Length: 176
Image 1 (tube, rainbow, N blue to C red):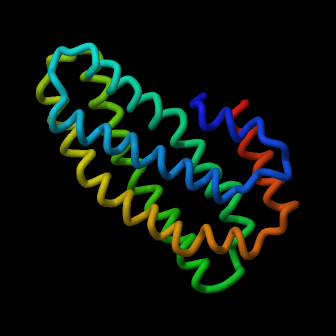
Image 2: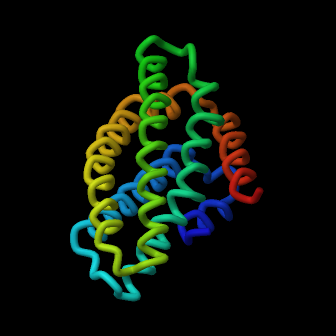
């Protein structure tokens, strides 16, 4: 588990702000997508740092990122659905974008794995960049949309008890 996750897992229940946790998740997404862009554009073939970076990218997008998506789709989405047409449209868009990201992330992880196995594979490194650059643009649009509509709706529509329930679900998801 990453240090930020450990920090919020240990907070007392009444200090859990679900939106803050989701925002931290968005920051990590941005960081790892940017790392993938850097690897794809300037990763020094054969270097130990390159291997470490691609392993971190693959680990994040195959293990941690799906948990974030589950937090949004399993814990937040069903509770927000039906609150307003604007929120419903944002939730639909969020889910559709997750499906697009899923395909791109699968390709990114495959190339990261290939580069981890053969750190001198320039084709795999270039393929990482070819996926990471458009993923960065799509993710930024996606994350902005959630921050603009979904997150304020969570703060407006969820009671403290609902937020504690969501936080418990997030914790359970990571401990499983």
